[in-house]
Image (cartoon, rainbow, N blue to C red; front, side, top):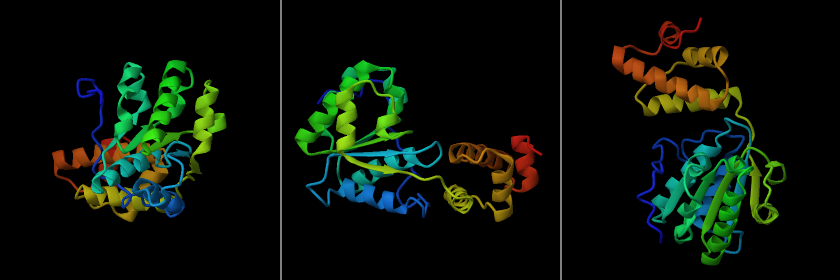
Length: 236
């Protein structure tokens, strides 16, 4: 396998993004299907699983969870962001087919990069030959991604495909409070609902705000109350 350790590539997984921490009843069936896909319970199923949905539905979370779950099963795994891959030569994908579970996040970013589309297509074929698993995420259905390589569009369409639905407000509250508890923080219903009502409701932005509050809470030794949130995030 090509030695990718010399390449500047972030492969460290967030330790709080697992299947257990994906608290969405709406998308529970998709998460379960992904875990079975990683386990290879059905050996006759396709080698590729494509998930798509709007920003904030947890696509990256589920890819990280899939990679972490593979590692828990003693399978080799890697989770890569197409945003980072675009800054690297396409040769970084050479040899990845030796890895049992490969996750590629945000494939829509490759829409105007035919060389990268060809590289992913070639990787798909090699993964299939090794009977390994490829999990890919995007923000649209395969047909709407804007990919210009018909062969890649065809390959992605062959595999399993599931759409993630937006989180409900109740699910967002549960997810934020779970993330807070993992950091040793107590986030009351009142404080959580205040965040939902004052900030962007996209989960990515809410998690970033929680990280900011976590660091400030440690620095100032204060609990996360509504006045504290107002002070730190400069909102009224």
